Image (cartoon, rainbow over all chains, first blue to last red):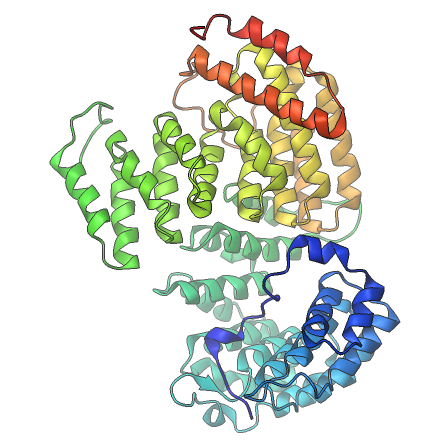
Length: 282
Length: 289
C-alpha cells in the first residue's frame, strides 16, 4: 500500500486557478469535463463540483464513477482524481454515495483512503463504522511509524471520524492510540474519546496541548477543540499562540454548539461569551 | 529588567536598552529567537522601535509579524506615517500586516485604504481586519463635514461586505463593524442607523452561517438596549483631540473624492461635485499653491 508522510496529508485545492476560472465554469461544463479525457480538466472539475456544491444526480453519478478511475494514476501509485472525487462527495451531502466511499477504504492510495474517511465522517452515516474499524486492525503495533515518519493508514482521519459518528463500540480500539508516538494521532484519539465518552478529562488534555512548544501541534489542538465545541476551552483558545484566523475558526466551533439553529434565535450565556472573545480577534 | 515608568518620553534619546533590543531583532538566527526579540522590543513601547517593527513586517515570519503589529498598535498614532509608507511598497505580505495594524489603530489616515481592501482584498484576514477597522475608526477626530462623507462610505462598504463576502468570518467582522458604526452614525443620521438595523433584520434570517446570525442577534440586542456605551472597547485612550494636520484631512478628502469619482465612472452613482465643494470648506488654504 502506498504510504504517506504527515506533512503532505493536508487537503489542498488545486493551485493556480483564479476566481475567473471558477466562475466561468458551469455545472454542465464541469460534469462534461469530469467525463472527458483531459486529466487536468477532470481533476479540476471534481474539485469544482464540491467547492460549488453541485449536488445534482448527474454530478454525483460522475463523481462516483471517478472513484474507480484507472487513467489518472501517478508513478508512485496515487490516484489524484479519486482523491478529489472522494473529497467532493463528502461536501455534497448525499448518503447514497456511502457504499462507493466505503469501497475506497480498500484503495491502495493512502490519500484516497484518507479523503474517503473524512467524507464518510461528513456524511454522518454510521454504516461505514465496521469498515473504518477494520482499518485499525493490528492496533497500536501496526500503527507504528515506518522509517520514522510514514504511517500505513490515515489514523487521524479514522479516529476522528469514528468519534464524530459516535461509534462507541470502537472505544477499546481507539484508546490505545492515546499513546501513539505521534502527538497528532494522540490528539485525534483524545478528541474521539471525548466525543464518545463526554469525559472532560480528554478535552482538558487538548487544552493542555494549546500551550505546547510547536506551532503545528497548537494548530492541531485548536482544530480539535473547535471540532468538539468544548465551551470551557474558549478562553484558552483565545489566548493560544497561533494565528487569529485559526482561533476564530476554533471559537466558531464552540459557538455553533451553543446556537440552536432555529428562529427566532436566542443567545445562551456561552454564545455571548464566545462571541465577545471572537470580537477581539478580528 | 526594563523599567520606564510611568511612560517613556517620546523623544527619549535612544537608550542602550533600545539599541540592544533592536540589535537582538536584527541578529536573531532562528524563528523562535526572532519572535522573542520582537516581543521584547514591542514591549518597551518606545517610538524608536518603530522602524525595526516595520521592517519585521516583511520578514515573512507570521509570529514575529503578529508581535510587531501588536507593538505598533500599542504605540498608536506615531506608527501611522511609517505604516502608510509601507502600503506603497510592493511587498504583499508586509502590506497586509500594515493594513491590519492600521485597522486596529483606527487612524483616519487609514480610512481610504480600509475602504478599498474591505471589499476587494484577496486575503480574507485582511478583509476581516479592514471591516472591523472601518467600524472602529476614531470618528470623534473627524471634522463635521468630512465625518458625513467618511461615514457614508464606511456604511456602504460594510453593508456590501455583510451581504456579499463569501467568507463567514469577514461577514461576521462586517456585522461587528456595522454595530460599532451604528453607535456613532445615529447622531448625525438616524436614517443611516435604521438602514443598519433593517439590514440586520434581513440578514439574521438569511445568512447561511448560524455564527454570523448569532452575532447579528447580539448586535441587535446591544443596539436595542442602547446603553450609550458601546460594548466593544474602542481604544480612544491616546487622545480625544485629533493629532492630524489640515493637510492630512485634505489628503483624506482628496482620496475619498478620488474613490467616489472612480465609483461614479463605474456605476454613475453619487455626485462627486459635492466633495469638491467640501474640499474647499473643510480645509481652505492648506496647499501652498
